Image 1: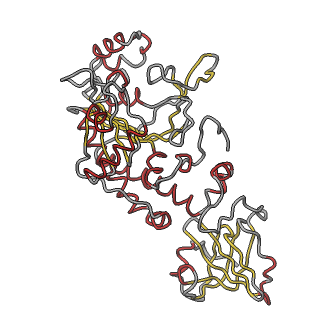
Image 2: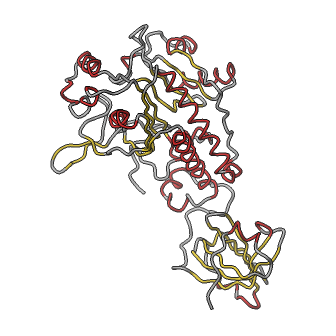
Length: 431
């Protein structure tokens, strides 16, 4: 006799009592009592309760937690069960081998293990409800990112991750042996997305980027997911900031639309993206936080101070700091026309932490040659990059969002590694 098609846990409550159903998933928890055993099954949609009676179903045969099973039985109404229904008179088939004892108790509401234990056992600890919900927020954010840009006429592209040189002048890169000659893991798709503006005008990419900078902090990873955008025919960096604002609004909307269960599990403070993100010039930001006027960058404490100011003064979780010194920006950054000491670029702070770097790029070939020579670099070292500009690239700009950092600030995690599926840092190369 053929078994019925699979029923998901969240569909069980809609099945008529007495209907035969088949569930498949992991044994989430067993509660063995004197005359009855309650087995809670977990699948990708949620939990379902299965009831076994000692006199007929031999509860001692219930497989251990995390064992993968197929269960066929009858639907019975039970208001106290998940979804208001449970499965009785079950037949249990183990799909594989009985599972080993998991490193953490996945059925508990919270994970009490320390971060090293959680990361060392990531393949199992991601099964916990709070961990799964964290990535559901990330997945929904990615969906909103793509949908928003697709609707605005952008094209998704994918650039090489093995490159011949560093994207940022002098930055630390991971060197690899590429058939007997040196190559590097890409720090960003910057060069390629600029060139593709000359093809599609509007492009975006979601992919890994690699940074060999020796930062051992709660906010840095050696590999992370970058959400990159580049588009042409802009006036200046404010057009880029306006696009970023629309994208963030789309990501927030997607979280509430596509991941409501994850929101229920984690109860994050969902940000409100203002119609216009407040902006402060870099020099004014230094003054506001009491930093020396010749400070080349904002320290983490400065960012936190500015985040509090944005919340108190503007009621915003977001603040754009524009006009960073040209000396601290990559060579392709467009200077501020009224004062070339400053750049037409910005960092976006989200709850007091840098989330996005963006701005206007140079688009004239001659400007690139001059900018590189002014920094003591040989334009010939960029022979695979610069010719595109000699063949005409429109005024353009873009930005990049770090996915893990976005989710970490969203759920106010203490460490960005909590939001990376399998994080890579100075010390971690497995699992």
